[in-house]
Length: 212
Length: 76
Picture (cartoon, rainbow over the protein chains, first blue to last red):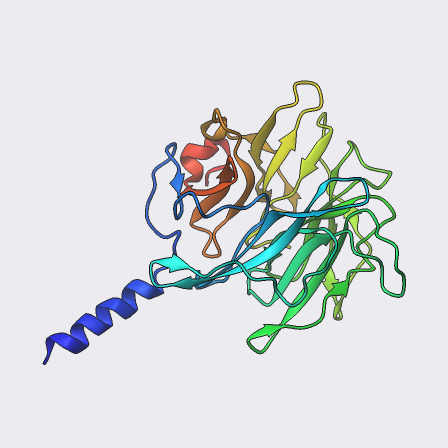
């Protein structure tokens, strides 16, 4: 009888270990969960590793004939993962590069969906959704961050500030890294991060753990 | 900050790391350990900051985020 609760506790402990948490020494990376764990870009794990957001190709095509990317949600089920499902903030347009804020409460992504109040598909902009209960609130167009050209690849810091990639004029390369601070509940005007693109034409931002 | 850079001239993509020192970001440093035959793309850290996540041929891979081995000049 004593073995049962012990075994159960062991199972619970195993389930609580995030899927990435096993030491893999540099320089020999290994697949995290087999060949089926795929993404084109964006690897957004919840803090406990129980939910993963990825971007994958779908059959739909954009007006230029290119296959679209969409964001999918996968939930951990024992040793495996659920079938991919479309999150509530998804669209019929191209959505990709899902990134979670360090506290897991905001999910930012790139999207070609029309700006609010319009119907025409656009170049990539940054959008986000905030955690609401067990799901997500409505998708929000990050008006303060975006420009008429390419903006995307969000890298949120734990203090709310956001680093991202933009093709707007005034940088050093084709895609430069900009920073916007989160102040009084909104993003401020983005500023170029110096040195981010010296001599390099294109930069895509990654992930920032703690910074100002 | 972990980032991918695409070189227009050679059409290669490499992984770089930049570290915030005082108030400024360092010049990004290339990560030779991730110059793999299949490009390491969409690099990021696990939510606990201990592991490096990226894709090769679209498959998610992981490895220790060991700054001393990945970018020794940026290690504390």
